[in-house]
Each structure stands twice: as C-alpha cells, then as structure tokens.
Length: 362
Ligand code: MG
Image (cartoon, rainbow, N blue to C red; front, side, top):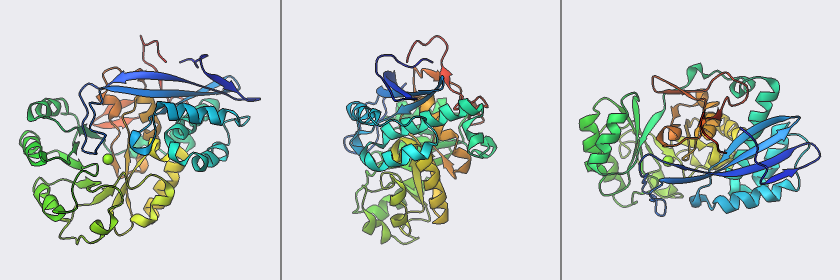
C-alpha cells in the first residue's frame, strides 16, 4: 500500500496524505432511520496515511451524514489539521485528544488519524496493535451478521449465505418488522438475534412493539426510539421491556455521553468512526463497564481496514457487530480472518492489513 502523492502535507517530521476510495455493498442496505434508508450500494471512504521515519500507517474515515459528516467535511478537517501536525504520531493521545474536542462533530476524520497512528506505531514496534494494547484476540465474541430491511425473498437469500454465523443482526423499524422476523425465525430458528431499530419505532405503542418482537426471542434491542427519547425509555418497567436489554447507539457517541444513559439503557454500541478512534473507544469501554453497561463494538459500512481497527479491541466487548467488510462486493483490503463466525486479526505488525492482491487502489 502506498501513500497518495495527490494530497500530501508534511510537518518537520510527519507526513499526512489521504485518498478517496469507492466500494460497493453486495446488496442494497436499508435501515429505518429517516434519511439513512438509502440504497447504500455505493460507499465512499477516505483512506488516511501518516508517515514518519519511513514507516506508513493507514486508517479509514467512514463519515456519516446523520452526524453531519461527509467526504467534504472529512477533507476539510484533515486540511485544517495539517497546519498543526506534530513531529511524530506518538504519543498518540497527545495529539488525538485535542482534535477530538476541536473537531467534536467530525470524529470520523479523527478516527482515521487515530487508527493510522496505531497502525504506524505497531509497525514501528513490530507488534500487532492488540499486543501493544495488552489484549489478546483469543476471547473475541462471534460477530453478528447483518440482515438489512428487505423483501422476504431477499432476506431468505441473505440467510442462506449466513450459515456460518450464530448471531444475526436484524434491521427493524418499519411496518414490515413482524413479517421479516417471521421469515427469519422460520428459516433460522436457532440463531441468536440482535434487533436494531435505528430509532425507527414511535414512542406511542412502544410497549406493544417490544412485546410483539419479544416472541421471536431476540437477545437485545438496539436504539428503539430516536436519539434523546430518554424519558419514554426511563418510564418502561422490566416487564414492559420483556427483560430484553436495550442498547444505545445513536444516543451514545462520545465518552461524555455515557453517564446519562445509566438507568435508561443496559448497554452501548461503541463505534470507532462514531467516537473518534481507538483511544476514545478504549476509554468508553472502561467507563461503560464501570457503569455496569454492556459493551457492543459496532461499525459503519467500513472496509477491512476500518474493521481491523475495531477488532483489536473486540476481546473487551460483550457483543460484536463487526461484519461490514463481509458485506462488500469489492473490499480493497485483506488481512482479517473468519473462524467459526469470529472475525480475527492476524499477528502482523500494526493492523496487519494489506491491499488485496490484484487491487490497485488506494
Ligand atoms: Mg445501530
């Protein structure tokens, strides 16, 4: 993998460059959140490279329009940062922490810098990132395999491809939820199910909605209501919840969001692209556990490069949802394994990711 010469900035000792890549999902990817129910077939990402002492580290920016981010805002953020690059990517938190606060709404870009710095450090130390972090991938839970909102025929086709996965993440939040769950339970009676409404359910009738999906025996429900619907959720009794854990996603972006979720949610979905990278995600995991919140590690639609960063932390998670690279038709990277439904990092230095053989980009 080479750094792009197209957009390159250098400080006294550190270079920063980036490149736009365009990949495609194998299926349209529909979720319930208004404005996000796009086809999702075309996925645009920015691959960031930090270079220092002849070593290159790479990270992926996966901007989300929901959080006010797009390719332009990522590039604007990177251009703003290039004027104040440190001399070295290490110590990582020393330069990433101020950026998280300065660009609080542009954490997808900061994530790419944080991840590229970790990849760089691992290559410099000739160690995998998980080893530098004092973690072992041995205890990584199996990933959920995501089934987006779709027709019964397409859902059946996706289920046929999901045989190696013991857990399915089902996108719900439309009037067709029950029909889709009927199809899934008929074809996959023994799979664990995570339901993700992406805030698509209405506050009125929430109790009935939870009861109607509870008969399909899901393991949890993620973000049932739009972000900020705390009072409605707080008013639910354990019986109203059918004893199903509720997981915050859109309600949980950064470290400072965690404490207010206690008593409302049972766990949080932490995503590197959402929170700003490995430094912030590690802190969030520690704080969530201290607050007795379960931890899910999730993803945006990222390539193997983005997923390889999150998977370094996955042994710390209760639930893993790191499958988006498997949903791509043309992932330009390789290096992750898949063993009995568990996504695994390798032991190569850094993130252990390389450009897939035969690919020319980035
Ligand atoms: Mg979610």
